[in-house]
Length: 78
Image (cartoon, rainbow, N blue to C red; front, top):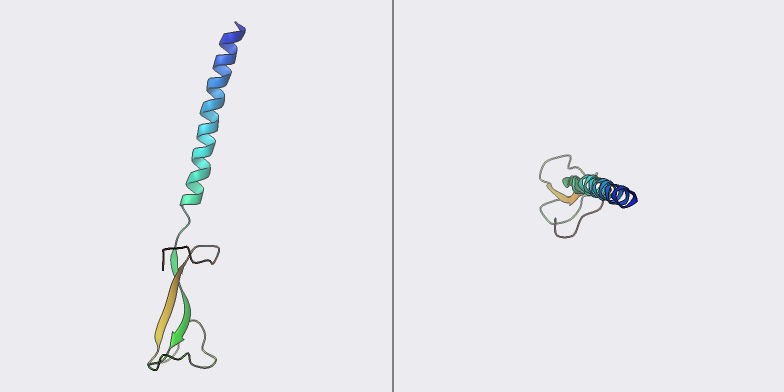
């Protein structure tokens, strides 16, 4: 009787652990990589003085980089 309880308990623990690990891994994998404006350049390749990260005005080229929700650029995504 005791060995049967141990086997059932071990089986339940194994299922619970694999379910918990599966849910934990899913939340990490759902981080979204999105482009974020980082700077502007004029036609000469220079950044205009006082320019915000998003371009305001004509003749400017928007520079962006891919970032995850924590604000970091993941390797291989730029």
